[in-house]
Image (tube, rainbow, N blue to C red; front, side, top):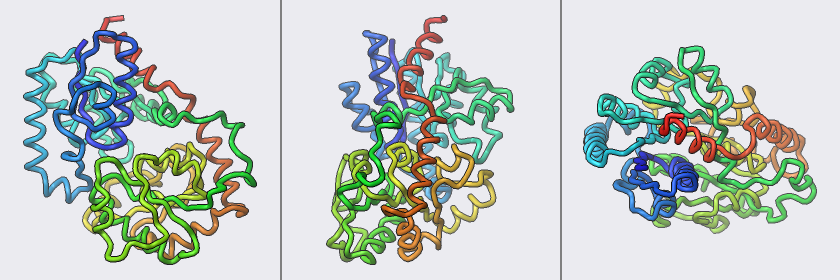
Amino acid sequence: MRYYLVVGEASGDIHAANLMRALRERDSYAEFRFWGGDRMAAASGEAPQRHIRELNYMGFWEVLRNLRTLMALQREAERDIRAWKPDALILVDYPGFNLRLAGRLQNAGLRIYWYIAPQVWAWKANRVQKLAARVDRLYAILPFEPAFFAARGMDVDFVGHPLLDHLDLPPLDARAPEGAEAASGYLALLPGSRPQELQRMLPMMLGLAARMPERRFRLAAVAHIEDQQYRSLTAAWPQNVDLVRGQTADLLREAEAAVVTSGTATLECALIGTPQVVVYKGGALNVWLARRLIRVPYIALPNLVMERPLVPELIQGEASPEGVQKVLSSLLKGQPERRAMREGYAELRRKLGGPGASARTAERLLARLKGA
């Protein structure tokens, strides 16, 4: 069968690549065409029609400022999908773009599936009706999502979180004891995967490193952003910060603790078991709008899944080098807050279930395509 996938960010590239492998294992005649990144290219042996680096806009103002470009890209995607005539169009997260694209293709005679349900529970719950009208099936990855959608008249499949596939985690009882963990002694910095995130988060994180010259830091660089882009955001790169590319999971496994920009990486950090401080800074307009529109009590995914403040969240002015240093110090080895967080992480993993999200999604999607 022919599968067309549309992905707009780095985390979606990871999960879509795993889904492509799962589909190919079950469909030896699978053909792929996609908008995505390097991981999807490696999984399919094909080049993306558009790379995620061309689609990485975030925040209300950035999207509004680039609205004309985004609309042109949607029209381009629509034309290409209609011309290629896939058996299945698979939209992966990236809701602002993909929901409008689904609307453009609603009457094109395509079977449209959405993997990784958009976070409409955070804001714009009225989008559920649009999803139900435009998408043949929605595959959810967070345990509270099926109840949310069911309460609004939409039945969805809960397939588990794909990070559990990507990370290849050991059993919970195999985790190193407190005294043996984090022998490396460095601290991890995860500033995000989008240029806008880097501009806001990286200077603060480097300021934190400058305040702690006695400690080593390793900064997780993403594949589609060049080293020079990182280094151009500060006049003086601290000597105690190393740039590490394409090794985020391994970096987190060896880190004593981490400072993580809010997003999927916070859940990755929790599943690996690394104590973390979650930080976020946005543009003034973006934050003003978010505080009036977003209806959830937390920004960090571990807290949303656990429905309690498992990891500390520092937002806007609180996310200063001084503020982060104070909270981070309470999570280093030997501190009671560290032990409590790691115990919460074990509970979080149980709530998310075991690995196999990619396989379950592929099986259910193929069953629908074959009319089973």
